[in-house]
Each structure stands twice: as structure tokens, then as C-alpha cells.
Image (cartoon, rainbow, N blue to C red; front, side, top):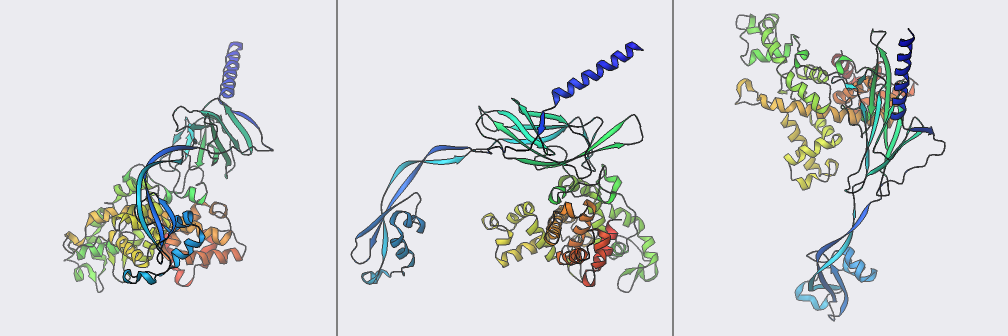
Length: 539
């Protein structure tokens, strides 16, 4: 027994020593000393052609001044101001055009290029700065939830990175929940993270370089929750990290945008992504889908009363029974693509599938009465939201439609007719209607549209977060839960930001917490349809 106790004591000492070697120096931070930040510039010599221009007066052909420029063509107004002074500049930019036949009566100046020569000039160039990244050690990410699960107390790893050759990271510093830490003469800093509350703690971190400066200050929000999953001898640590410097499994979509953690252990099922597409399989008897399959001849319902359809092309019970197998096969044909898209974009796979079920019952054409288009029934207003609020998607899509130089100014700075062209192109891109195609649909176009709708959902989560901030004065994560923010996003997608803003305003005015249960009664009038819409998708 004494030998066993001695071994246990030795193991405890070794673990303690291991933890000490792992830990950085920690101290209270009553008077923080911020790092200098990046300060990297170098001077390089550049060869160029210098063009010499003379500004002459029209009346007497007298030299007024000389302008030296480093480009072909006439001197720019700011170059005239720099080389000739304010008086000549004012005359130069306000003088009327001079007809060549009437030059004797013209006022002001004209420019003549009188020479050019090769020169060299020195210019200042900013160099890439040091950076720092955050990760976890010995923890397994969970694909469907973005949460990391650790079987022992998690190890937070901060790694400095120096992009310049012959320079190194010399020190890592930061604060963990207000307590400063540093790791000397190293580019990696590790320490065990204790359990936090559900809001997590703030970590700020930066690296110092032998160059003589530091990286910018980076920030992360870290939540560590201890979970007993039924085995009293084995605890698990659930870890979530929100930071642009995070190098682990991608966080739940929109968590960074909203600055909010998903529920401990992962989001609810409707906001999850399974590991296999078979887990998305459904067998719901969709009536709209059944009617379209009968109309297109996929299902033979000729033995049913009225061919399986009542007036108005609504499927009857016999037609629904005849089409059951085809309906089941059709509604699951996009599952693999939905799963792939979810992994690429982070938008939950079950959310995407539920959205398509509610919007189109997986029939990717145009709903004729209102012009909603595709699996997710995109409208021009919806396209406007996507292009405005999802900048990365805009940057990919716009050059497919217009010249890249036009696109470079950003969607909000395009001319109204250019915006209209882009919106129309986006709506058309999700329209699988094709008169010459089998079933009247181009299913390759439908496949392409799955990614478009995922990016559209990201745009709506961005806008919904901004609406929450605008009408509460709080960050979305401080105002509402992760799940409720997704429900607000669906309101934004279905009814628009105005409906969401009105419901939030009425909820706030009554001093109520910003929950789905509290705001949904204030979705009234034209906005009221969003209530059933959200409840249906989030079941």
C-alpha cells in the first residue's frame, strides 16, 4: 500500500511539474502596457520615366512654371498645384476650353511636354507584420457542432508568426480574463484553461519580434465547460473559441458575426450538420412536389380521379399515394450536395434542407404568382440583401456578370442599373426552369443554387445582427441567444429587415428580453407569416 501511495504521489508531482513547464508567467494587470504594434517600412529604389511639362500663357507664350510627372499624359490637377502653386492651379482648373483657331483671345495656360528622362526614386513600402494565432492541443473537434471536446483540462496554444526572413518571434504576451501573461524567448505559449461561465472569458494576445516591434493586439472569446457524460470517472471539457485568429475547426456560422457562443455541446438539431448525408433523409408527403411530379409525367396517376389532380393542379389523396415513392426519392436527391455545402460554408445542413422544404418543397422552378425562384425561392429583394451584406460572395459573383473593374467599387457604389443587372443575374442563377430540359428543369442549375442559398443565408445573418445592434444598442450576442438570433435571421430572410426591426422595437419598448417567444407576437400584419415560417423550419 505504501508503494502504491508513493507511486501516486510521484505521478502527481510529475503532472504538477509538467503543468508548470507548460504555463506562462501570470500576474494581475492593474496597469496594462500595450505593445507598440507593427512598425515596418523599408525604402526601395524604383526606376521610372520623368516627363517634363511647361505651362505657358496663351497670350504671350511665356513660361509660367514647369511640372514633372511620373506618368504619361497631361499633368493632373494636384500635380499642377504641387509644382506651380495655388494661383496658377486655380486658373488651370477653372479656365474655359480654348478653340485652337481663337487661341489669341484665350486666357490662362496651356501645357507642352518638353522632354523626358529615366530616373530613380525612393519609395516607402510597408512590410508584413508579425502575427499570433490561437489553437487547442489534444482536443477533438466535433464536425456537426464546431465544439471541441477535451478528455483532460484543455491546453490553449498561442503561436507567434514572423513573416520576414532573418527575424524571429521573441516573446508572447497577453491577458487572460484581465490577468496578464507572457512567455519569454519563444514563439509558442501554452497554458491550461480553467472552466468558465457560459459567456466565456476574453483573451487578448500579441507577439514581439526581433525586428523591434510587435504584432497587432488580437482578441478571442473562450468558453470552457465541464460535462459529465454519465461516467463519473471521466469528465469532458467542451471548448468553444471565437476569434479571427482561431486555427481550429471552423466555428458555428455567424457566431463571430454575432459575437455569441452556440449552446454548450453544440447547437440544437435544426442548426446542426450530420456527418453522413443519409442522416438528412426525409419521407414527408409534399403535396406541391407531388403535383409537379404528376404534371411533368414522372408519376402516372391516370387511374386516379381527375388524373390525381383537382382543379388548380392541387394533388388529391389518390395522386399523393401514387407519387409517394417519387416524392421520397426527389426530396432526398440534394442531400449530399447540401451536406457538402454546409461543410464549405458553415451554414447548418439541416437548416438548409428545412428551408428548401418550406420554400419550394424541393421543386426548383419559379412560383408563378409572386416570381419567387429556385429551391429557396429567391426574390430580387433577397438578391439585393445577398449582394449587399455578403461581400465575399459579391466579390466572387459580380465578375461573372460584369467587368471586374466595375465590380471593384462594391455593390453599394454601383449605378442603379448595374445593381439591377446583378440582382437579375443572381435570381436567374438559381432558376432551374428549362423548357427544353427533361421535366422542364435543369437540375445542374438547381445544384449550383444550393451554394447560392447558403451564402444568401449568411448575408441575412449579417443583416439581422446589424438590425439587432441598431435597435438595441447591444452586440447581437449580448442581446439574444445563438438559437434566437438564427430565428431572427429567418424572419429577415422571409419578411425583411423592416419586420424584424419593428418587432424588436416593440419588444424593447415593453422591457422584455429579446427572445423569439417575446418578439413573435409583434410580427403582425404583412409580417405575421414569418411566425409560422420560423416555427416550421426550426421544428
